[in-house]
Length: 439
Image (tube, rainbow, N blue to C red; front, top):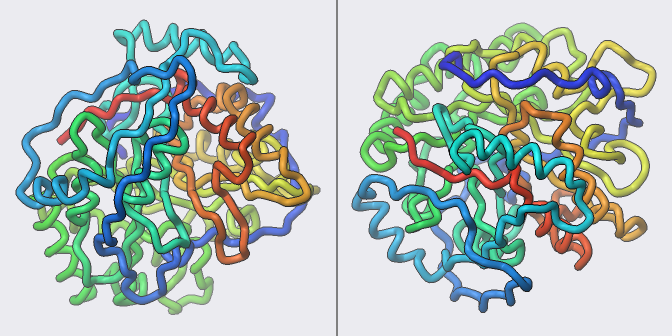
């Protein structure tokens, strides 16, 4: 992402070092988090279920005011997949973008964002390297840890939340399946509802050190992958390599999994793909917002270099019960350890360490609680106002699962109040960004 980024406002100092939390962390996972094993995951096109009856739109709901221009003619693979997925990807009811804040949200966020949109011709849209000209991209990784992923899960999520998702996040691993798959291409190319693909790949054929040195099996897959991408999907898309890599760092020299090995592996993968023709990948370096890892002496050694990192992403969640992760939006962005001051929080670290990189919440959500059922709805209501304090966040991707490996539920409809608040949150002008396909 050394490639030209819009300069954004700096973080207000009032939030730079403001949050402390008690540690009781639970891993949010990689490919395993959506029910995929450590070997090559099953990410092929699932059986297409009949479309569900669209839910009744809320009073006053009308088609969205933002529209993406049509892209170039899709490839043969995309065309066939679009036909197959047409019934599943039925348009969801899309909320009207109101001129005032939805009930329960601070009006302060609405007016400045509307003014910004007006200065840019009346709408926000995706620009170079998919950085929105204004606003925040809104997306989802649907159906995690369920048998229903892909188009069917996306369709259900869009129907229940009442809006189109600008980003579709999917996970891949190993060296057997090329991506984007036909179904993913169809999701990106749905007529009138273009989406940005966010494809997450975990290399599993060799250690990081061996991949960085040119592992034959991995390089052969990367070469095939580059040809596949160039032929079937020329538009830009988000691409992550082994997200949350710090969870797998082995500090011992020679392990093949040191922080420097990770950086070298990531660099090799991105440079080889681009050299072989897949120069449309927009790379995202995805960290987990786990403070003990971030405070390790090796943490900054994981960085592969500005020329192969376009966005900085991190995965972070709010917890409904008091303790670790319990708090407002500022807490999940700038989480720290109680009594320790060496770590400023992920957002503060990113804007200082990587001032020219747009930031993404590559996974986010609110874990439910049977004891504190109102917390999730309250979190969504506050977030519309809280996000004003973090202007470098340019994309947010909900990780949607009814039950993760610890039985935790991040579903936005875990309660009727939560769903209602999330729907209103998604209607705010700041989250309306038109997807304009780029090559």
